Length: 72
Image 1 (cartoon, rainbow, N blue to C red):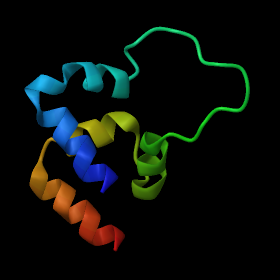
Image 2 (cartoon, rainbow, N blue to C red; image 1 turned 135 degrees about the horizontal axis):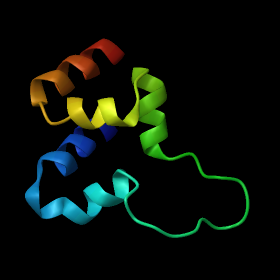
Image 3 (cartoon, rainbow, N blue to C red; image 1 turned 180 degrees about the vertical axis):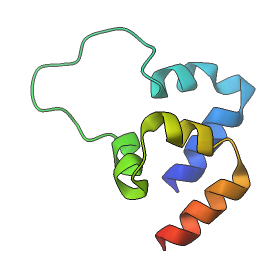
Image 4 (cartoon, one colour; image 1 turned 180 degrees about the horizontal axis):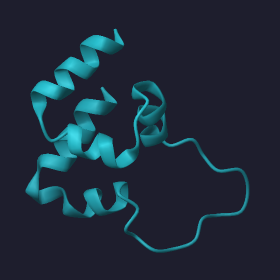
């Protein structure tokens, strides 16, 4: 599930580049056209919280399990 994968990225030391990408720390320009719906946006909509709040929550596996059980 997307939330479990996000938690895996946020907790793992070897995923620093992915963490930076997920948190929007990579500078650059988007392509022209309609913006794609990201899976991070899906998570924010499903759980009704901000990206920062999601990043904080997913570092704890127990909280992830509760969030998933409440979603089902």
